[in-house]
Length: 400
Ligand SMILES: Nc1ncnc2c1ncn2[C@@H]1O[C@H](COP(=O)(O)OP(=O)(O)OP(=O)(O)O)[C@@H](O)[C@H]1O
Ligand SMILES: CC(=O)N[C@H]1[C@@H]2OC[C@@H](O2)[C@@H](O)[C@@H]1O[C@H](C)C(=O)O
Image 1 (cartoon, protein in one colour):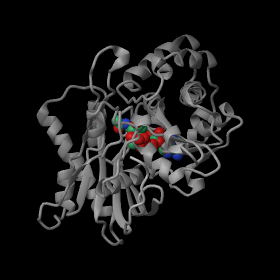
Image 2 (spheres, helix red, strand yellow; image 1 turned 60 degrees about the vertical axis):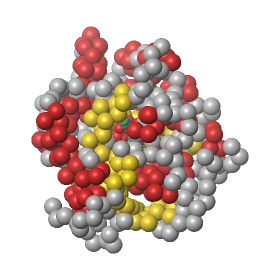
Image 3 (cartoon, protein in one colour; image 1 turned 180 degrees about the horizontal axis):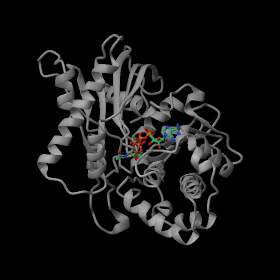
Image 4 (spheres, protein in one colour; image 1 turned 135 degrees about the vertical axis):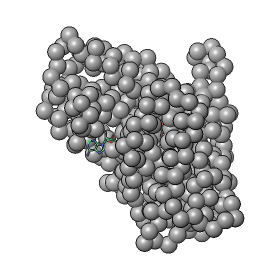
């Protein structure tokens, strides 16, 4: 579908997501106008609402493959839906109410399609908990959810989905940009200068681990007392082990050509344990281990640009929690010496809430009847409307 210009009125939309770090629900209240080429978004409020430690532990366990009963799954789904509905209520306090919610939910399982490469014909599967219908009922606001399914049903990965929003919010007329999200998992959108057939030249894929292995290592090294390496200070006091990084870069995922997607199913607890085992002969101290894992994240990003981009960008714009890791940012800059590494804040888009903002836009596009996926990013054969629309059920707002 070619980019369009529809006449639209500014709409107040809430975007909600909890990502693969499972650190809490990011909520963004935004005002959106335009359609795609003339899309405009302004952030009115952004908050992260942490899960309770009990709910977080349950979600992480399910994500790590721990077997649970259907009854337990239902309980987790209820708790997530309630937490998302509360986040939607809270983000509106002190503001004019929203008329639309885009809720990504919480990914607990992601399986990319295994098509041509594996000589099987298996569709992808991606499960996000936190039912949109319940959020619509509680808030009294039409809610779009289950964004990944439509893309998966036509053979796509259902991920990454944010690149189409990146393209319309962050493209530049003169410079090619890589928008690099570093959440639990990393993903990139390469956006060429906005002229000619620029849309058809966009590329995007999951680059591999973002903070997932680092966070797990910090928890392991501190017996759970710390959950992440603040600003990368601990890693900055160590020295990366180059031979281990070179060994780890042989991982098959890093050599698969895009489109590709991944998750904690690959880069999770078992992967960290293998890394720890590989590191034993080197007798690294904790700081060296964290520096080495940080180096794996940045080297996998730089390696994927060098391997899969049609040309190197003029700028890299970081977003997601990893953009706050100063050591990681500095190491990535060293590996990409001729490309300035900045954050999306520096071009006016909040780096912490970009994913939440993107799901607000995807809901808005769904309502306008505009597609949300980018076939080059997800591998789908066509553009398609994303998300299921849940209208309020005719009952007034519920106080929770
Ligand atoms: N000040 C900081 N210093 C270092 N790391 C940080 C800082 N702030 C956040 N992080 C890292 O960012 C992570 C959270 O990032 P984010 O919220 O973008 O992930 P996510 O959205 O859950 O993941 P994904 O994008 O894969 O779905 C934390 O787990 C932590 O590792
Ligand atoms: C299945 C799933 O939740 N994937 C996430 C994850 O976190 C980052 C990366 O892997 C990306 O593919 C995706 O998230 C963002 C929001 C996306 O779809 O663009």
